[in-house]
Each structure stands twice: as C-alpha cells, then as structure tokens.
Image (cartoon, rainbow, N blue to C red; front, side, top):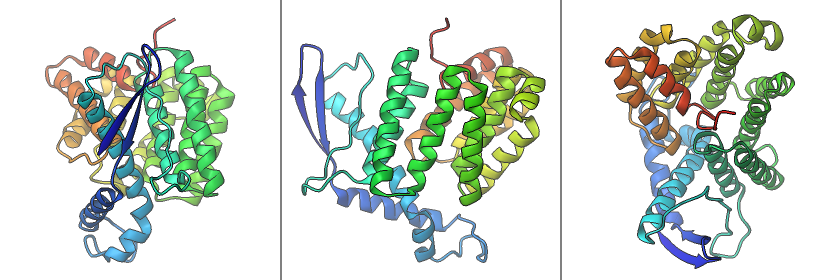
Length: 316
C-alpha cells in the first residue's frame, strides 16, 4: 500500500491510496479456496464443489468483499501512518486505476458501500447521514451505468432506499423498498445478504411500530423475519454477520428474546470474520453477549439498539 497526503485546507486533508492488484488477486483466490471447502450448491456434496464452479458463482461477490476490506484497512493504516486525527466523516471516491483507465463498477460500488456504512453505523447527525446516502447512490448509479444489472450495486441501492425510508419514517418508502427487495430475491434467491436485509426489514418494522401496525400497514411479521434470517444463515453458514444481525434485531424487538439472542451470538463469535462488515457486527455482537452472559438483558438491549443502523443518531 502507498499513501500520499494532500493538504486542501487548514483542517482538510486528502489521502490517495494505491493498492497493488496482485495483492487483491491473491486474497480473492485464497478466500475462494476456503469457500470451496464449505459452500453448498445444488447438485454437489458439501466440500465437493469444483473450484471453477465456485469462481463462477461467487467470484464477483468475493472480489467486492476483498476490495471493501482492503479499502477499510488501507484507510486505517494510512491514517495511522500519516499521524492524522479524523474529526469528521471521511468521503470515499473511486479513483481511476494507475494505468489511466476509468474507475470500474467494482470500485464505485466499494466507495458507495463505505459511504452507506458510515451513514448507518458511524454518523450521529441525520443531515450528514442523508448526504452520505445520496453520495453512495451516485456511486451505485455510476456503477450501473458501467455495468447494467450489477448485482451488488442493485442490492446496495435497495439498502440505501430502505435507509432513506427509515430516516424519513415513511411507511410508503418502506413498502417500496420491500417491493424492490422482493424483486431482487426473485432474481437472486441465493443471495444471503439480501435475505438478511429482508429479515432486518421485518424485525425492524416490528421493533419500531409494534406487531399490529407492522403487520397491518407494512405486511411485516416475526414469522417472515425468522424465515429470512434462517435462509441467510443457511446460505452463508460461516458468516458471523447474519446470526449477529439476527440477535441484535431480536433484542431490539424485546429483551425477552435474550435467550435466543444469546445462543445466536455465542454461535457468531466462534466464527471467523473475513470482511469488514462481518468483523464489525461480530465485534458488536460480542460486546452485547458479555452483557447477556452477565444477566443484564436490559443493558444488552440498549447496546444492541446503539449498534443497529442509525443507532448513533442524536435523539430529537
């Protein structure tokens, strides 16, 4: 990794980070080989899926994850290397590769994902969250212009749509997001992240509106939440993000769900996390698990709500 620092103003800095693609390729191949040992696909026994098939099915998704993890790690390393103190919310832009070509769809999606994650998990100001979501959508639109139908860009736009609906507290926006998500899952029924998003949509609706209103106004319910999260965990059985997100959502709904949340988090913390999002959720879940193990269910619920999307927003 190479990092060059530019001074744009008294308090503004710009980091240009370059990562060798050879390093990316090595990590992608390593993760795909590990995935070959555990992945389940129709027509093959577990652990017997040919590497070529795994590359075809999961190669683009794994590359996105590696690029995203590299972005987060490189940014943190560069900040430390340059002795910087991050006082605001960083803006990520996809730069052209060093060969002079234009930014790729993958790099644009990575930049957008980073902006969404900062908006949802690291921002305490609603206006800043909205600005970050808008910037993320611009990157996803640019990615789709370069690669129409790009699966990751399409799903991230749906997630962004849900975030806007949550910030607006808009039932209409929430239903529109659910309709788009249903269409996505019809086209991509084996996308574990999309199923987890659906589980979070149902659970979040119940947590914020109550069972009756969530069911009658939005069509959300706990049964659909459970089915969606179970599907996500079946499709990605070694990813700690899904049981962690499920457990945090259960606690958000009711601290009486502590026993099931505890079981899910105990399972999650024993799993290896291989991407930035999974690492963050696993760590957050581990902190909540300590409170559950201490018998502090109310404290665990408060902590869970804090680490769910927009849990850091200042209460008005």
